[in-house]
Length: 212
Image (cartoon, rainbow, N blue to C red; front, side):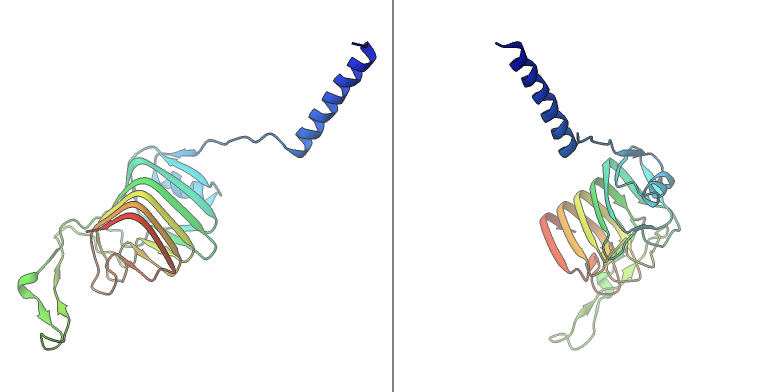
């Protein structure tokens, strides 16, 4: 092969490589930010982190606002309500998006039960609704709001929410945003108002969801 042609070919390869690098920059994958305390989780989200991995069981004692796209990998850990804390955990504002995967959440009210022996009717039995009193456990924390207030988009994958009591509707999830639940369990939650588990979703999609 002529040496001049070879050199021109090599130069052309270099030019094409430079053009390719300019037009298609090398994509790098940033590892999730790892957190082992609730304080770390909250500050990470407030500082703009969008991909987070929980590395230890933790308790929440305040609320986190979600205004952009956030993904939390629970890593099969637990995020539980602190005793005495009655507020919510996440507030997803309009335009915000929260995806939670592989996480268990205990809301701190494992002792409540429904007193069927003292149930009553709001109208004559053939027309009215049956009311069943809820008796709280001695050490139950009764929330004053929902766990997740959602006016944006919420997706739960392989998540368990249990042992919840609140004075408002939708003990687990409330709001008019979009909700997607995949392989998710909501168990032993109640409210004296409508929607013991969930209320007021705009678009609800689910694959294997269990309400117990």
